[in-house]
Amino acid sequence: MTGFEQTYSAFGRLLEQELARRMAALDPESSVAKAMAYSLLGGGKRVRGVLTLACCEAVGGTAEAALPAAAAVEMLHCYSLIHDDLPCMDDDDMRRGKPACHVAFGEAVALLAGDALLTEAFLCLADISPAEAARSCVEALSAAAGPRGMVLGQELDLSYARESEQNLRRINSLKTGRLLEACALMGAACGGAGEDMAEALREYASCIGLAFQIKDDILDMTSQSALLGKPVNSDAHNGKATFASIFGLESAMQRAKELTADAESAVRTALPGDRAEFLSDLAWWLYNRDR
Image 1 (cartoon, rainbow, N blue to C red):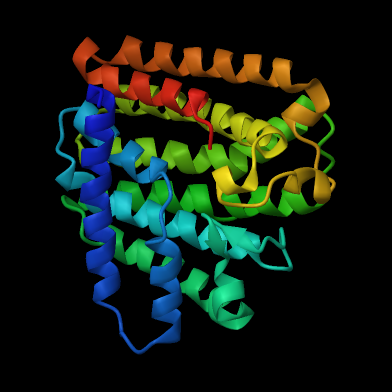
Image 2 (spheres, helix red, strand yellow):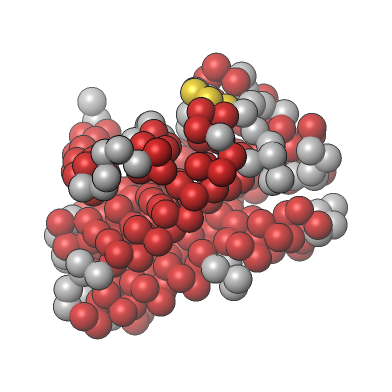
């Protein structure tokens, strides 16, 4: 196991323990609580939570200081996946290799589980100290998730003409990039970083966010459901244009590579070599992933 893999696994274990602890504190008889735990603890790469912890450590803080923020962003991301899978949105029946929440628990319970995870995410942020860091995290996460970010992106994704790079970049930035930027900003706030450092990490996250979405689009066209743990060719099925479908697989992959190089440059310019190493490796790991 490489040094990067060891560090990623350590972040992941810390985060899984925190998420499990928070789910265990809910009413064990509640169907909504069971649906929340089913979706939240059902696997996933934990990219957003790990990024939050890594950015905090990169600026001189500890992973533990950013743990509430990392748990919050994973809960919020999970809520968005539950709602995305609903019949009124993307209408997907599988998520992370098992039935989607609404298939397992029914649409009403799934809707409530997503709502509850969104609310619980902001309760997590109340555990952050000092208060100024908590305020910064609330601002970053709410701006990324609400009508200025992810929700707007989902609205545009349902109704917007996508057949241009400008339109695709806007949708992907709002739906994916803004939340990854919030991870970087929250990690920086929990680690006590200054504005310049926080901005460099935000730029890094913006680049990996768009590269991440382009790679997702490529995998949707080229991978298999058993490997991804969710349906493939869903974009084509839903009539959605993507970077890969408009510009071709080779051009899309090249664009993702350029964005990843930009991300590495941003973080290596702002941070000492040893602190930049994990974030640089993370960017290239996301670019090279097969699921």
